[in-house]
Length: 371
Image (tube, rainbow, N blue to C red; front, side, top):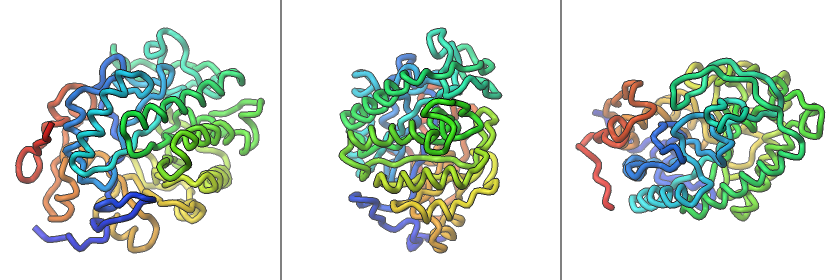
C-alpha cells in the first residue's frame, strides 16, 4: 500500500471558524432506519461516530416537518424526541473530535399521500413527477401534488426556522439547507416545476423568493451564515425526471450571487446527475464557484485522485463522498494508506437495522465507540 499522507486533500483545512483535519466531507446519505415518528435509532450514534474522521459530516436529509416527508423511515428535526435522539449522535461525533452539520429537507412533490396522512403532497405547481415514492407498503407511483396557496408559504418558512433552532438545540455545529435534488426549494427555482403567477413564480427573482426567505430564516437562527451551508444541483434531473431550468446559468448564477451576499459558509454542488453521470449538461460549475465568496464543496462520483486533481486546479475547496462511506467508516484512513475500499451491496443501503449500517469494520477491525 502506498502512503498518501502528504496529499493536500488530507491536510488540515480551515472552514469558516472551524479547524478541520482534512478536506473530506461525508455527504448526506439517506439510509431509512428511523422510526415512523422520524426518530433516529440509538445505533445511529455509532454509525456517525465511526465516520467522525471525515473533515465534516453532513447528516442524512432530515425532514423539517411532518409535511416535509417524502420517504418512509427518514428522520425529522421538529419534535423533542427527535432532538433528544440527535443529541446522542452529535455527542458521539464530538467525542471523537468530529464536526457535523444537519441537512434541512422538505421533499415537496417527491412524496405520496401515504406519507402525508392521506393528503396530497405540496409543491409550487400541480405537476406530477415521474417515478415512485418509498412508502411503508413499498414503492408507489407519485401523484399530482397540490399547488401551495400564497398565504401557506410563510408557514413553511417558519418550519425551516423552527427546524434550524431544533438542530442548534441538538448540538449540531451548523446546518445545510437542502436546495438540491428537485425537492421543494429547487421545485420553486426551476421554471420546469414552477408555473406560478403570484410573487413566487414567473421571473427569476420571484422563483428565488421562497428559497431566499428560507435562507434568511435559517441564518437568523444561527446568527448569520458562518455556520450555514447550502446544497444545489443545477444539472440533475433526478428524482422525478425533472427537466432542467430553461436558463440554467442565468437562474443559478443569480441564486449563487444572492447566497454569497447572504454570507453562507459553503456551497455544496452536485456536479452532474446524481448517482448517474458527471455530465454537466451545459452547466459551468467553475463559473458558479467563482461567483460565491465562501467555500465550494464539490460532489458526484469523486475519487481521491479526481479530488486531488480538482483541488490542484483550484476548482474546489472540499469534496464530499457518499457511497464510499457506507462500507468504509475509516474512509479517510484508507485514502491516506491507499488501502482498497469495501463495497456495500445495495440491499444494505436503505432500511434495516445495524447490519450493513453500523457494523462495517475498519482496516484494523471494528471501530469501537465509547458511550
